[in-house]
Image (cartoon, rainbow, N blue to C red):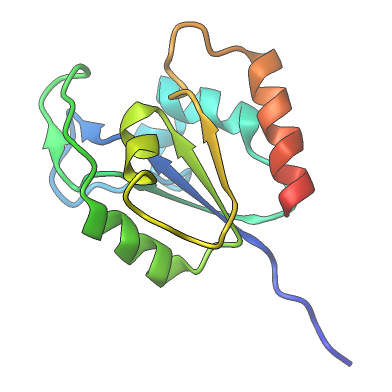
Length: 134
């Protein structure tokens, strides 16, 4: 008898801000779960998988408009560590990382969850695409 492991979705966001060094986004962390990013991202996430979230950069900004370029080695390390079946790149910074990172895993692109035009309808389409890949 064989058991199948739960599929893993690796979500790559931009970068954290207004928090301490060492912060990582997770629904186990109330600051993330209650944030606008956390609430809106949840609209797009399927229920049928293990979800791991990381940032494209390990740097932490002071304000919401803090932006750092993707740290390619940081993203590659996350892919090696979590061995995802599918990757969800959220926002321009995360998406730009995949112009330099080649992977055989499917990469789904979506706007950052706090993008002003991001909607539940858009999230629903992304969720369906992810469910089909997982």
